[in-house]
Structure formats: C-alpha cells, structure tokens
Length: 334
Figure 1 (cartoon, rainbow, N blue to C red):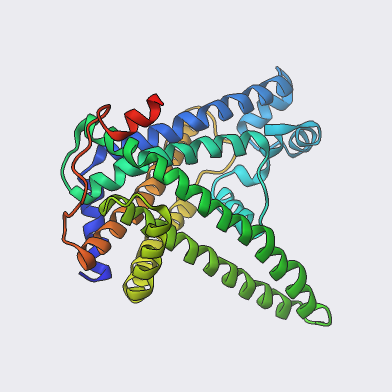
Figure 2: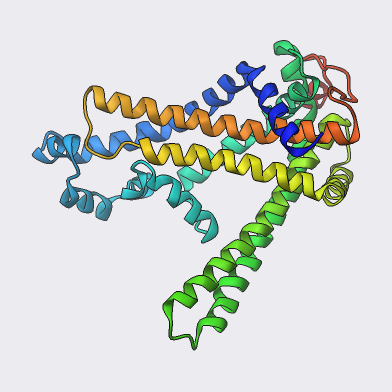
C-alpha cells in the first residue's frame, strides 16, 4: 500500500470511530474550560460596569486593552491581540520556532492534556489497528495496557525535544545566525538565512516526531514492551520506507494546511456580540474539531502504512484487553 492509499485508509478508520473524535474533543474542551472561566473572571472584574465594558463588547477598545495587559499577571498576560481569530495560529507557530515558553497555568493545562493523550493513545491506536469496535472495556483496557509504556516513551521523547530546544535552537539562532549575519547590510538576506534555519530546525523536530509516532505504532501493533526496542524499530522502519513515510506525512500536512487556510478565511474578528458572538464560538469549536480530526488522521494513516508494509490490514499481536482485567489493573494496584 502506498502513501496515498494509506492516507485514504486512515480517513476511513477515523470516520469509522466517531466516539474517539467525540471523546478527544470532550477532553480538550474540559481542560480548556477552567482557563477560559478564569480569564473571563479577570476581564469581568477589570471591566466592571464601566463604559469600557460596553465598547469592548461591540468593538476593540485599544486603550482599555493596553491598560488591562499592563496590570495583568499570570493567565491575564495571554490576553493579547494574538488570541483573535487566525492570529492565534501564527502565534502558536512562532512560539514553537522561537522556543518561547508558556506561563504556569498554560503549561499545567498542557501537561494534563499530554497526560490525557498518553492514556488515550493506546486505545486509539488499538482501535484503528483492529478496525472494529472495542467497546468501552476493550478501549480503556488497551489504554491502560499501553499507558505505562507510553509514559516511558514520553520521557525519552521529552529529553530529545529538550535537547533540541535547549542546545540546538540556541546554537542555530544565537550563535550561527548571529555569526552569519553580523556583517550583512541587506536585511532581506538575513531574513532568508533565518528562514533556512527555521526550516532546518523544523526538519529536526519533524524527524523526531516521526520516529516517536512510529514507535507508538510498533508498541501497540506488535505489543512491544521495550520502549527502546520500539524506538530502534521505528527508526529502522522510517529509514527503510522513507519515501512512503515522508510522502504520507506531506499529504497529512497538506490536509492540515487546508484546514488552517479555511480557518483563515472564516475566522471571526473582535467586536461581535449576541448571536454573532455565539456563531463565532461555534466556528472556533468546529475548527478545533477539524484540527483533532487531522491529528487522528496522522495516527490512523501511520498505522495503515505500517500494517500494509510489515503486517496486514488488521494485524495486532496482542488480544483485545478488557478493563479492569488488563495488566494495567495489577500495576495500578501495587
């Protein structure tokens, strides 16, 4: 099976399991809700019943916005113009490429989100690999079985990403970029050099992400208990099938860019109220669902590609686990 066939097969697996999409969206929404309510309280306390509150509800009150950000702390510092519409997408990309950290509340929510993914990912991969309903017990049984393996994998992956951001990123942008552009007199040339460095750093992140993703696939499909063995096997698979792996990743990336482009066209701006405000909220949630669908497509199509090249369409080594009779129950009880 080629990359295009795996891409189409991945979408079939995603569409065949709508409960996974609903569950992942619910987790995302519930983790974001406390942050949204906290920020809402900060804004309401600062605006009160002032005239600025009325103008802020119907348009952008720049003077009030500057006043709020000047006195804000913690979560309030994130309420900047970049939270409006498509600007958030650009700000997220910039944060990754420029290695900007997050404040504690955001980092905490992100940690919980990644922990939730680490737990659910085993059940998601198992469901997509088997291509048949697991029911609740089977899904959470698989999630429990692979959770501790994925935690070990997350530690190794976290060290790899930490090394990239702590050492490679400063070496590229704080040393090499400065050395190369120190005597440049044309700003456009310096921008081109920085873009090339962004592409190089992005390629390193991509390579790390691919190996980690296929390590997860091999852990689940082949029921591997050794995380290091799964990483080596994933690296070998990516190397031996590099053209198909990269082509599939490119197809999924183009799908993601299409979703982002559509959001750029319909993303609401500031200043709506009443029905328009709720329409803007609905559009933003539909965008979140679309992003999650693409994320799940990355997972499902990777499973399809691996099974097509090293197994068969529905091969999974382990039997269907049943929560709480899965091995994870014994581990939790210790």
